[in-house]
Image 1 (cartoon, helix red, strand yellow):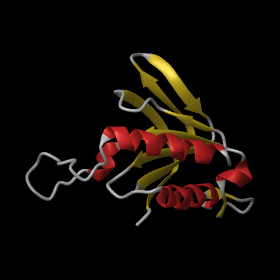
Image 2: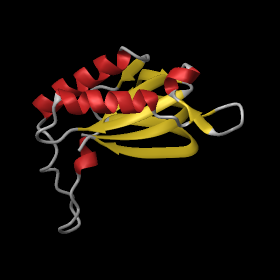
Image 3: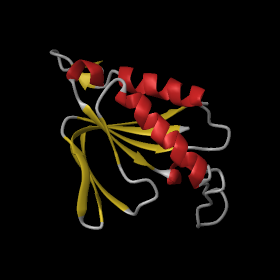
Length: 145
């Protein structure tokens, strides 16, 4: 499981010209799954995301988590996080989990995040337009393995 975390001041997701979800201060998560990902992987990365200290404290030091600042999460499914580009110029997605299983894990990931902080999803498997205003910019790649 991979989660690309971006600190955001304002972000939104659109499908077919319709606003699906938006957040102000918080995190945008791009999340992808691979074979053998389990609930343990989800639990590990949920805890990591909500406790990740990447928000500034009073001294402008990244020392606060999303829990500390009261932000929200915009969580977008992103199978392309498992793109393999070692051979040729066309990425292979063979390492990405099949969409049926990935959808179950994505929904569970969002459900577990929601136990800690308001989490707003995109639409799984949709052609989404994601607007991210990355604050910092802060971008961190987390992996469960």
